[in-house]
Length: 392
Image 1 (cartoon, rainbow, N blue to C red):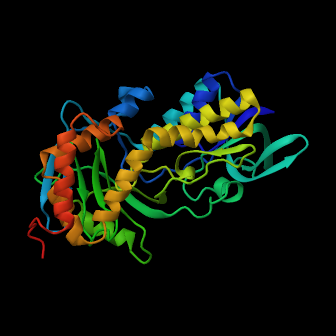
Image 2 (cartoon, one colour; image 1 turned 120 degrees about the vertical axis):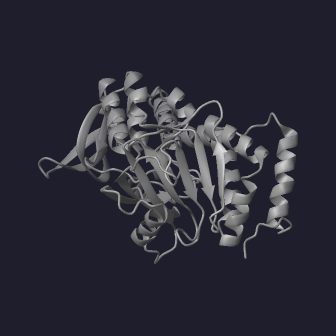
Image 3 (cartoon, rainbow, N blue to C red; image 1 turned 135 degrees about the vertical axis):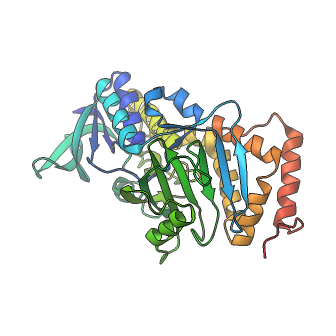
């Protein structure tokens, strides 16, 4: 009998297992080996600080973000007084798993199958990777951190089978030397319907490598062809391809994260990827931390209602940011004409400063009320087409 079984060993599950083990709880982390999630790999300074990430995990330090519109208008946004760190998920996720084990978590490699219950307790049934035989882990509480389209969510939590998502695809390539088109200290974000009709494409440096990809929620879009077009337009078609990966990215936090009994969801399984940006590593790790907090409260009190604490803590701090980002995506990702206006709006110094303050620190900046008013008026002017952009 363990206190907790964490299903999933990505940044979310590994963080939950690490926190619980450090708190003295007996915890098992069940993970499939060999899976690498497609991800741009950007982590803000707050993540580095809050989760004590060592410098050797940062493969690149980004000092500029470039927004590119459908007409190829490019807006460079400098990242003042700091940098955005880049990680390679293949190494970063394993670092987090090993850290959890170092804190006392037990690591089990296998595929989650189902949860069973009887008088002896709650049992997580999985197929052992080495033997192929079904095994059981018994626990007082289960954390479902098994990613988007979570099998735990589908079977255990109401609404878990209805989370909307986009499909992300990227290719890790051997990075070229710095040139007129490629800057190893700059992230490029491409808002162009030819690359993605409803999301965006990206070129993110990873030191010796780079991530080039896109996402879409529209059926029938050829993700590999769109990524090939992006590589060609950026002069990266001839670079060696290291690996290719694809996976769903959820678009909205679930209304409920627990089953009212013995299961709580976390990270992608609960739908916590930021709208508009698709940022997931930071919010996944926060999701793992609040799920661990809720599990701790449940283990102390024995009251299932304490599992609701995970969603309550997360939405209290990040709910407003998610609502603002959702409204921005709904307003500007509908068409190339709107995307052109969005990139045009990014020229504004107020937008640049407040956007990156919010991104770096993970909270809305309220210290500059006049800047917020100015941004609101400019945003309205763009949406009403009162500002010319040159897009036809």
